[in-house]
Amino acid sequence: MKKPINPFLLTGYISPEYFCDRTEETRKLVSALRNGRNVTLVSPRRMGKTGLIHHAFHQLLHSDDNVSCYYVDLYQTDSFASLVRQLANAVLGTLDTRETKVLKTVAAFFKSLRPTLSLDPMTGEPSLSVDLQPQMAEHSLAEIFQYMEQSGRQCYIAFDEFQSIESYGEKNIEALLRSYIQRLTSVHFIFSGSQRHLLEEMFASAARPFYQSTQMMPLKEIVEDSYYAFAEDKFKEHGQQLPPDTFHVVYTLLHGHTWYVQMVLNRLYESDEKVITPSITSQTIEEITLENEATYQTFLRLITPQQGQLLRAIACEGTIKEVLGKNFLMKYQLGASSTVRSAIKTLVGKELVLDQNNTYEVYDRFFGIWLKNGKG
Image 1 (cartoon, rainbow, N blue to C red):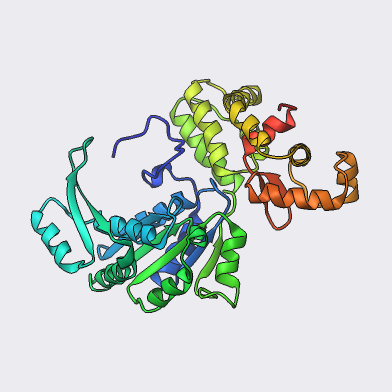
Image 2: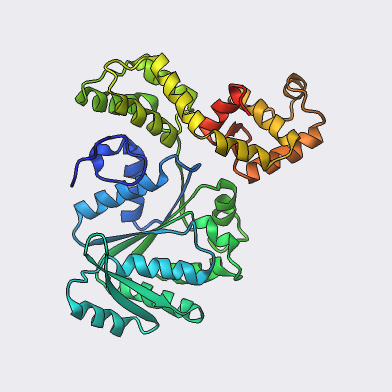
């Protein structure tokens, strides 16, 4: 493993050394999977779901040689066939393709898939991909699950952004998936996603196929003390000091939202400043918001002036629970509660505002700071 230049990773997973805390969450996730329980993992975007999944998979793979783990990102899928294709590529991509006989074995087993062996132009490593006919998608799914069941291994699949299946044109996809999944004994699942209301409806509504079929697991912020211990250690190794009061400013300002905190720490680590002060962090955050100013202005152009006024008011408050409360409406001159009710629904739908059990915050933490500072 090549050591990263900057230990505050913004994408990907390398090893436990660069993964902050989540000890209890990892334990719960690994324990549920080992004991045959499927899990629904829910949190806002950029809170660290994907990293947690890969960290849990790392533990499973390194504690048992008889385990296979597959991560499938459904964010850009638009049909049942594209889901099956993503799953097939994840499963077949883990095979040892250095032997040409593997291709023949796969071709013999997967009657409905057409595997293709190719070389990665960057690394020269062989990779296996599949061509799937949409009309054969259900049959292909059955073959993939049968392959995993007959592998003699415990298999774990993570479907990330699982709520994406809601946008598929086909009907009854949930019922179809559920009918296959409930028959599997050696394959268990993580259903991960960022749209809480959609996932809760899927897995907690008695009218839906996946009703009470999983262990619900909400993912919250990393505890500040644990996050600080991790960050302080990395800065110390780099010859830098990160005082606890400075980290507290960053953590509080960004509501502990993992990716945004990581971004600031990444920049501060890059700065080579010997002592990280609150003024240095403020300057760093201002630089980040200025870099994204064009994007933020685009966000505002996509909404009405009334919605923009509400968005700024929420940014100024940081968090607001009584969004229809008289004091809030009067303070920011937001007009009638019916107008605000419609506006907040739109802002949440566009993922500009985060709704956490009827407590509202600007979703993009840097955007919120930019708005609060009177920009736009």
